[in-house]
Length: 553
Ligand SMILES: Cc1cc2nc3c(=O)[nH]c(=O)nc-3n(C[C@H](O)[C@H](O)[C@H](O)COP(=O)(O)OP(=O)(O)OC[C@H]3O[C@@H](n4cnc5c(N)ncnc54)[C@H](O)[C@@H]3O)c2cc1C
Image 1 (cartoon, rainbow, N blue to C red):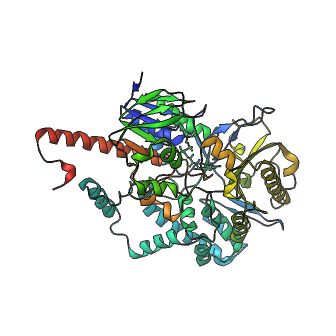
Image 2 (image 1 turned 90 degrees about the vertical axis):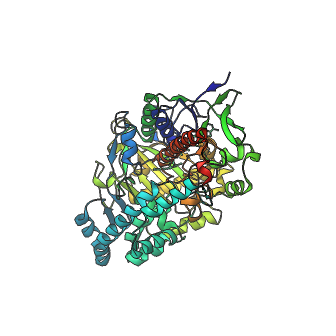
Image 3 (image 1 turned 90 degrees about the horizontal axis):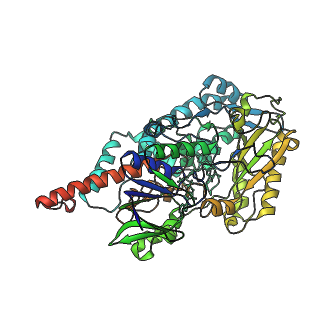
């Protein structure tokens, strides 16, 4: 027999769990349905090596920054185990023995470090930081706002648009100009306007290409840099990144505990195969195996292509929406490599196998913006990068819950292989690609190769098969200009509603995503609450015989 709920959430990644927590907190009888045997999606911790069951890695995503303190506070995540160690500096070493360390909050040290590469850049860096901080003040509130429902003339949507315009009032022409530059420029061009040293620019270009199917020369990558540079978007300040204790899976676990503490039911091995509809509204779901669950609210926290091309009957969706989903771009060419190490990398530029500052931050492999661009061009031409770009971190320098004493985990986020590698495992080529990365790091830290105890290489095919990341994009869809704000995931449907009444979409493919931030889920539940309040109000007014308020005057 069908079980009636107030709300059903499809997908038990962190967004699904955050949505479940907020819905249950509002008193709704809620169930979160996860296809896999475990919750967390791309925010996961696992023990991948049967020979080393006591070594755990943060499987896919690896650092936290974007989750607003409002969500952490509302869901009492700290009470449920959420704890983050702030990351150390950005670190890049060069084979000739030079290195650069940049700290998030130490202008004096940064000045001296940068001056060894360029005195002009050392002077420019504080101005750049201030410039980004000013932009964060504008972008933060935008990321926490529901985007306008394009094309709608309903009074309530027009009111929302007016409110958004009101929030943006008083933006001076300089800020508008800066925002326009940010949204339209390549990170290479933007950095060329500020800095002269390729080494310094490399450190800032990295954030512009994380998860993108675009090299740093591509327009729009300046925005990706800003997306990854903003910290607590609720406060709109620039943030530093951090390692969650217990890996990213611990963040998901905290979200799950919060959801369950508020009364949500969380089911694993519960794959949704169909969304049930009646008279243009979602009314429930069918699970693999045939079980039916009913609810007046269904929240999708899975990839939009799976949701709207497989689960929702095509005839329920307007042509324009279906076209937008069909042309949704979801490429990355990302490969994640996790290494277990018997000792820390001993860098020629900064010798030592004991924990030092440079081990505590991101240990980059990106010698210049041109280096990253070359890696992308290889993949665009259909080959894995000969010299890949890597954002590496060693969370075990802080988090000793992941591995036994003396053992470290080196988590490498790497780009690019051809995005079409979702279609086949490409196992041998992936292993060769990982070998090249290890060789490149070993040129900088000669002990690295010999210190490897075990390794795991996860390619686009694995991510699509395991997690449902269609096309391999780590954010369920590219952060490209045509897929941001009012366009995410489709024009006219960026307000977390969908063409079906009662059906909402809140995965990383919606506004505020991607990243492990919970913003899509929090905003979607805010929208659900508002819709339900308005519906109750509308019914009350209609009972009194007044004109329908939503039809306007
Ligand atoms: C390699 C990699 C590195 C990353 N690094 C970072 C990082 O360091 N920091 C950061 O902030 N972000 C990072 N990201 C991005 C971030 O992890 C994602 O944006 C975010 O985790 C997505 O969360 P989600 O809940 O929207 O979706 P997901 O985590 O993708 O969860 C969706 C869930 O839905 C389930 N599902 C799918 N279909 C169904 C169905 N039919 N029925 C039921 N359940 C279903 C899936 O099994 C999955 O568990 C990274 C991602 C990857 C892949």
